[in-house]
Image (cartoon, rainbow, N blue to C red; front, side, top):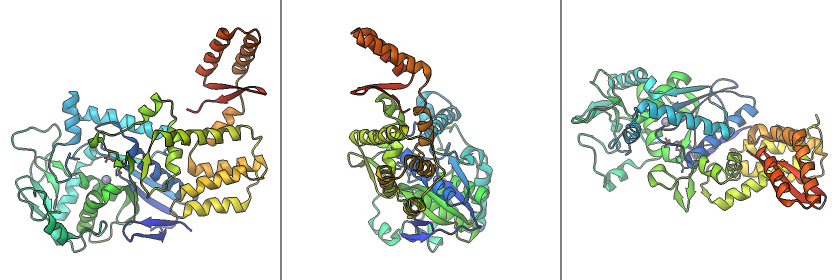
Length: 460
Ligand code: AMP
Ligand code: ZN
C-alpha cells in the first residue's frame, strides 16, 4: 500500500491510480536560461525517487516533463523580461541556441544523478497551437478578458480558485501592496497570452486570434500535460514555490476549460537552502554540479545527501554535509566490494521493511538507516548484496556497477601496484609516487594499510 502526501488535502492518502496499474506523471521541467542549481536538482531527485517507487510497486508509469523555452518572466506578476530572451541578449545568441545549450546541460546533470529519463520531453515553443486552443476554450467558457497587455484569466469566476495553496483571497486583496498590472481586474488574475511591449520587438512571438504575442508560463504545463496525459491525470509535481502561483494557475486553466478535476495528487518538494535562505538563481547564492566536480565531489554523493532528508522538509546545504554524505557512500561501496557473489535469497522481513519505509510517503531517511542496519546485521554477505541491489532500484546509487568494478581490479592496475611496491621497498619514493599518480589517473585509489596497499575504485 503506497501512501503519498497530497498537497490538495494536506494529508497522506492511499495512492489509487485512475487506470489500473498505470500512472500518468507530470513533472514541471526547467526554464532553460542558465545551468540548473542544486536546489532545482534536489527537486528532480525527489521526483525520480517517486517514479522509481511507483515502478517498484508494479505500476507502469508514463512520465512527461516539459522544457520551458519561452514565456517565463522574471516577475511572477506577469511583468518583467522573458528569462530566455534576457539570457539570449546577454550572450548575443538566439533564444533557441540558449534553450538548446542549457537543455543539454540539464539532461546531462540528470544522467549524472542517475535520474531516469522521462518517457516524453515537450517544449513550450513546440506547443503554441495547443496553448492557443486552451485559451480559446477558456474564452468560449467566458473566463477571459482583454487588456492592452494581453488576454487574462478572470480568477473571480472560478469559485474554488486558490484551493491548492488555500489562498485567502479576501485577505490578499486587503493586504495587497504590490501594484496591480494596469487593466487587471483582480490581484490574482494572470496572463494567458501576452502582447509584446509596444516599443520593443520580441525575439520569439507567434500569430494568434488575439494578435501577435506569446503564451503565459502556466499555460504550457496545463496544455501539454492535458495533451499527453488527459484530464484528469494522476500525479503532478514540482517544488513548493510552485504551489501559490504556477500550479494554482494551471489548475484554474485546466478546470476552467474542462469543467472537471485536473489532477488527483499534487506532490511538492521542500526547498534546498543555503545559509538558511532558499537557493535561487535570482539570489545569486547557487551551487551547481560543476562546482562539485571542481571540489572532487561525486554527483551521487549529492543524491545520497538528498536521500538522507525527507523530500517535504527543507534541506540546508553545507559542504560539510556533502563531505559526510560522500564518506558514507564511499563506505558502502568499500564494504560491498568485499562481498562475494550475489545470492538469490532475499529475506522477506528486510524486503518488507524497505518497502514499508518507501511506501510511507517516500521515507528515504528511514530507508537509508535501514540499509545501514542491514549492512551491519549478521546476514550472509551474499544475501546482503542481493537485498542491496534490490533496494538500489529506488536509491539509484549505482551499487551493482560499483560492486562489479571494485571486485575486479584490472590487471594493468594490479601490475602498477606491484611496481610501486617494488620502488617503495627500494626507498625510491619519487618513482613510487609517480606510479601512484598513474594509478589515480586510471580511476583507482591506493591506500597503504598495515596489511599492505589497498585499492579502491574512485567514485565518479
Ligand atoms: P525553474 O527552472 O525555476 O522553473 O525550477 C525548476 C524546479 O526546481 C521547479 O520545480 C522549482 O520548484 C524547483 N526549485 C527551484 N528552486 C528550488 C530550491 N531552492 N529547492 C528545491 N527546489 C527548487
Ligand atoms: Zn509547470
